Image 1: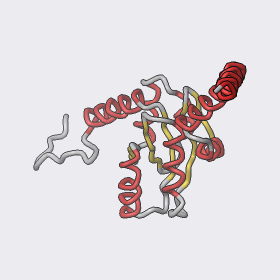
Image 2: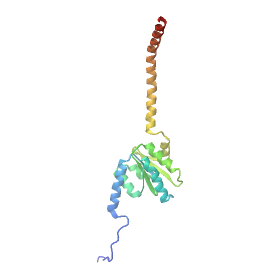
Image 3: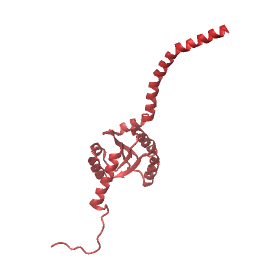
Image 4: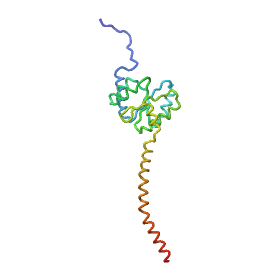
Length: 185
């Protein structure tokens, strides 16, 4: 005989399977669109500190979310970024950015200096998983725009020397002709 429930139905706290599927789909789209994902551990931070941290990162184009490991792991697998699953342990929060990887790492490292309990676990950049030490070294590199400027400068210097070398005989000829013209006058 089946049990007969009496009384009002209670709603599940987590929203059930449909809500979890919706959360996985949202995470999957975020993961798929992100070029860089940095996984952090926020244990020991208060809610106010997390809100302040998010507020500081937002103008830099970084989204910071606390995620449930099981849902995030499923979303990572569905978006074909399986290297993320091995970074998940303990209370996890992720920083997602679609811009330059170095800028994201710099932003996170700079803003996390004020929080002793904050810990970077690793990252997923360019199709591979990275350790926390790799993220720290990535944050020390110059940004993409600086590297491009350095490249253009290093390409431009020899070219300008070649142009100066080619113009020198012509400039010397002009000076000789001007001196001859002043002597005749």
